[in-house]
View (cartoon, rainbow, N blue to C red):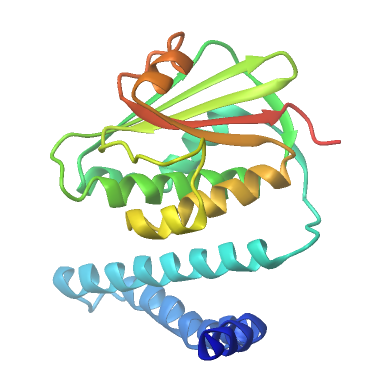
Length: 235
């Protein structure tokens, strides 16, 4: 137990420095793989390898950014006004290559335009972690569908997110740290919860009977999903 406590203390305190040390070589990997891709002397096969290196580097950078935000006690948000459906569509345009390669069907449902005043960066981080959660769940299935339902309910934005992977069974209405690690689908649920809390919202994960009940007025044909409620505007 003593060794475990020492490990937690050391790496807890050392995490900012570790992230900094990882970012230095990572920036070189991302930068050079991006630049060399546009070199006309590089053949298509090598360009494909470079593209994979670049995307892997960006995935690591996104993970480090999640850890940065998770460790902050206070976050100054850069707020802007935007329409939610368009913002979500713009986010997934950046994932077109992955969506095409993995043959994912993306379905976004919204009854009306919903304009909010929030941090677009944080919304994108919520979507990024939900998307990565789906990708890890798609590894053993052939039918890959993602469903997003957007609705305004009173003064809140209600966002339901689901995919065609198998539901995850948890004890409460959201993932504990131990459950998140046990299911081996990444740390996305923990980061999603953190980012939703930044928005002064709440998030729950439903499956089977509970999901069908909460999802009865949406057009999502799956048996599990995330239900995220956010205020229309930050205070």
